[in-house]
Amino acid sequence: MSFAAMLSSQQSQQLAERKRIEAENLMGFMIGDFADKLRSVKRMDLLEGISEQALAYVEAAQEEDTGWFGTTAQEPSFELRFQHALSLQAMAEVRFYRNDTDTAKQLYEQADERLGALLREQPNNFALLIAAGANAFWLGDIALRDYNFVLADAQFNRYLRYSEKMLELSPSNPDALLELSYATNSIGSVAFRQQDFDKALSFFESSLDYKLKLLENSVSPIIAATAVADTYSWIASTQMHKGRISEALLTFAKAESILTNSLSTYPGNAEIIETLSLIKINAAKNSQFINGPSTSAAQLNDAKNLLGQILGQDPDNSSWQSYYKHVKALLDYYNSLTSISTLNSISTEAEIMIDELLSDNTRLSSKIYAAHSYQERNEWRTSRNLLTQLNIKHSIKDDINKNINTEASNVRVLENYVKYQIAYIRQLLHDNEENINIVQKECEILFSLSKTVINQSKHPLFLQAHVFAGYCLNKADAVATQRRQLTRMNVPLPHYFTTINKELINDNTTQL
Image (tube, rainbow, N blue to C red; front, side, top):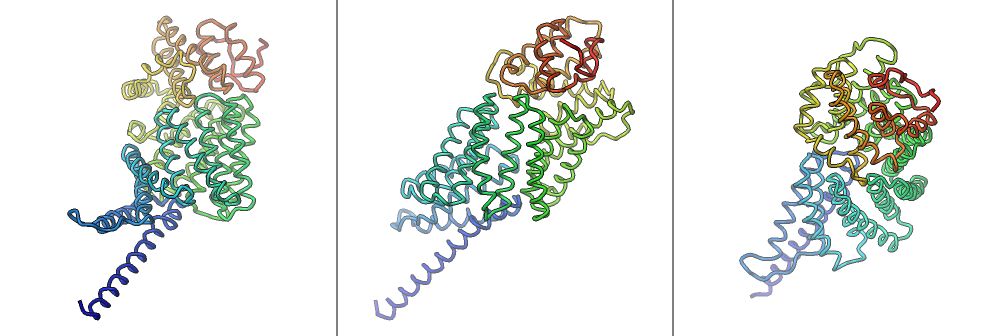
């Protein structure tokens, strides 16, 4: 080969290498910093297109690097393999928010395998530890949604180890502290669902300490504000289960205040709006016990308006669609209670239609609240049909019977079971008032079901359910302790208690 040819070949190789590096840098930006910006504003529609392009690029580039038909070529670069894992991770996140959890899990598992291999090469790579921690979180979150608490706890603890390693490598790094706060909060969420409220509160308070430090000196004020508010919400929910209602409502108010101030600085930010709307929903469901339904309805109207804003940004976001339906179902319920408490007829049209309730993307809890709402509106035929459909689709009655004597049941699932069983009993009392044996059988189920949780939880919902079942069974003495607890918390008995005992009025002033 001539010198000129050799020089030309070298220049071509250098040009190709420079273009490869430029392309990798561009892909790194797209799947890294730019993707993070899209995540912060919840633009899954844009993230989907970018992640697909990035994945196609890194797969094609690795085929070139490894050669064709057995030819020898250099191993793909570390950066290229890292980008491959990040592309899979981004695709998984999009599938998760498109309500395709199975595909999301498969993609996260593929990313996890690649990230693990990279960590064996560079165990102290900070960016790699962030990615591996995020992947462990999402796998844990999917396991948690499937009620696999053992796997969820294992994944969240793996996330914690990655975060602790990051803090060890860079003690003053805010990203390390943020990831540590997320991991701690995640472990607390597993304990919460398992009714270990003391452990949950301990982890949530540790997480809050980390996040408050970030909020004071944060270069990412949106992330810090939403993180602090989210943990305040977890703490408030835990306080509710410990019977500290007034304290819980003040904690919810702290969370709302932080996000309202943040939203005034960053109007339209989807991360802030989503978190604020969810906190308002939680606050509404809990404030009803002492503040009444009108306060809850006002908070839910705020949440509905907020969710409407971000659905305008991404109408295909299945999580936001589900939250929006949930708010509408809750609004129907609290509006119906408001009408009863003010002795006015229910004149407002229903927020959510029956066909929406029966769609796949509607939460079970939304459907159960809707059944109660129809009962409050005296639409008993509709509530009967809805309860029947729920039992057929979700096998609720079978699940309830399986969980009657299970001490470690998921507290969120128990909330659904208890509310369903109360609605079911009310329906029977309306339809078959003369057949006391059928009603008593279902009250026995509610009594046993609520008994499994009241030793751990002092949440008013469970206490009310246990008292309701006790009076239904003429076991007033057996539920006297729970009635006194409600009295001390200033929680009145719901109006429908009079359907089982005419002497029970809508207050808790009776001396027990």
